[in-house]
Length: 277
Image 1 (cartoon, rainbow, N blue to C red):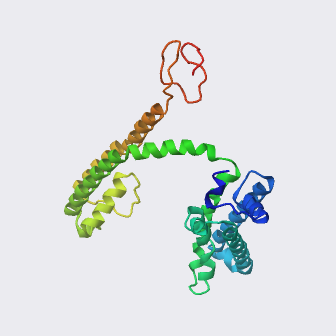
Image 2 (cartoon, helix red, strand yellow):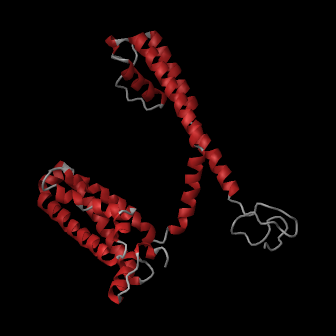
Image 3 (cartoon, rainbow, N blue to C red):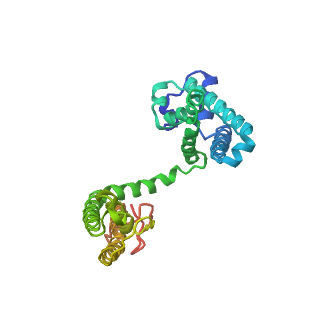
């Protein structure tokens, strides 16, 4: 109940009932509301995506325009209803979902004054995050927190790695500019650094390439270095993730063999089978 009351549950019976339906998923009515809302969100995002396709827009522009306004009106009514039902209106307005709910309806109205802004409606896809409530996936947020801790723990190593890579691409880009020059497409050092980034990350667009033998030799070295360092961030993150997972182990001590480091959900010692406290 506590997570549902973060915006202030109203006191009057009818508003409390509406609050439970719109902000809660404990009742069948609340689940049904979120399921219908989820379908509307996906359908509205799909309509925006289809409207960006010229052949579809030219044939079904009226239907797509109708769909845009239909879903905008529905989401506007929903947003106003949420504001009416909560006690702490400002807390909802400035919450993550409150901001997303507001931004999901504004582009259509702004499109009346500034044509083209209606394509910002694609932000409605963020509302699909409500699927965590609809499908009861909140239990998996603990695993997401584990990944976030691993990313935070490896931040300094990754920053050092990025600084090293940045230094390498600046050096190789500058050398390629000196070797190839403007006549071969390397018109400036920043453009040459762009080539070095594309090459060292193994993307290889092919829009720029060296023409001289010395330039090709430097390009070969850049490619080899790219393959050598491309796996470094993955290794850093994997090592930190392993460290975080190990630290999640339970600190309970087995009374039979004094073993530490059991799984959080373990009821018996993995070593001797003694019931854990």
